Length: 489
Image 1 (cartoon, rainbow, N blue to C red):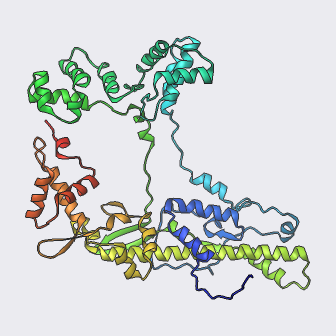
Image 2 (image 1 turned 180 degrees about the vertical axis):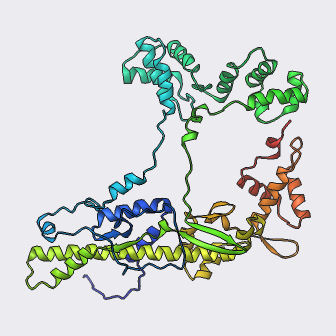
Image 3 (image 1 turned 135 degrees about the vertical axis):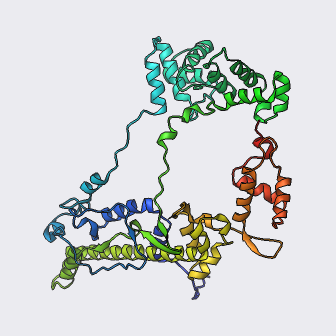
């Protein structure tokens, strides 16, 4: 028999407003504009005050002072009139900004022109078009170019290319035919294109150099017969194998180091520019730090007065039919959504400033000087306790936000570090230890680089007692290879 019981449970659930705030908090500044435009397009009850007067010049990256507060009662500019009758007669709501003073023209005005340039594969295709090839060889060449990876290597075996040609283009090709077309493509620019491994890539580039130069001849010998010793920097073995002294070997090695191991990305790298928009600016005014928030984090949004007046009008109407009730419900939903979004933006702004201000005060000496040795040990809990917020909130801010200082732009996460205790009992940041390691390695004799054991001894002499494996961990985190691979002639 089924028994029914009554139970009470205490559950913690996030409201839709809290979920919206969390999502907005972790959005970086560079993506916040897009998120706001999406909301403006979806919700006609939400308006951007900056679009009210299009004739006034708008600064692209103004700073907003932390003391400035958002005022919803600001006097509006000239706004589009909302025709209630049109709203009732049409079910579809047009995109925001479709009328006078819309956002499309503003977007066109702010758009930054992008230089038109051919891609890596288009450049190869143009070189292929200039050759006098048969139709079959031309199609084989297109298949080879399309099979190259981003580094410019052909990592698919020729047998697989033959199968691709047979199944995709109904072309029956022999292995020597594909190999001959591949040899032609390997003559294209940039040098090294179409190689099947690193050794072949380097040899293609070396064979395009002056073959009368003895250094080039011996460099080819090294790549062909002693590549393993070269990559492991066993220079003493190379000197014995080539019967050369250290100076001659240095000249030969320099010729190899000039080569490009990834010829495919040589043209693409120029187009890949990392553009970081800082969320905060910190300036030093005679020893006093001043924090400002990028104004993109505090857009001037407000609820549409036309929608509000329309809602008040129909809410007070004496007679309400079904269509009228649906209209009132729709307008109320859009108004509530607009208010929630504005509140979430305001809360985001306050949380960002509160968190960054706590980080700045905690690391005050560092932000004054820019010296990483001034960084204090700091974990997420330290900041969370100061601002009385959850650790997850601090983590969302630190993992995606940048601050611009007088000595560079940094991710907030980079200011957090673990503590290491010195011989005197003082706790210092592991960033300080990494900085000392970097300085020691930069000043070392490159002919006899410092091993991890020697670096450990140097740190102990300076009062930092840490294990050799910890030194290796820090060195790898900084992207510094082992001593043998740092060796130079």
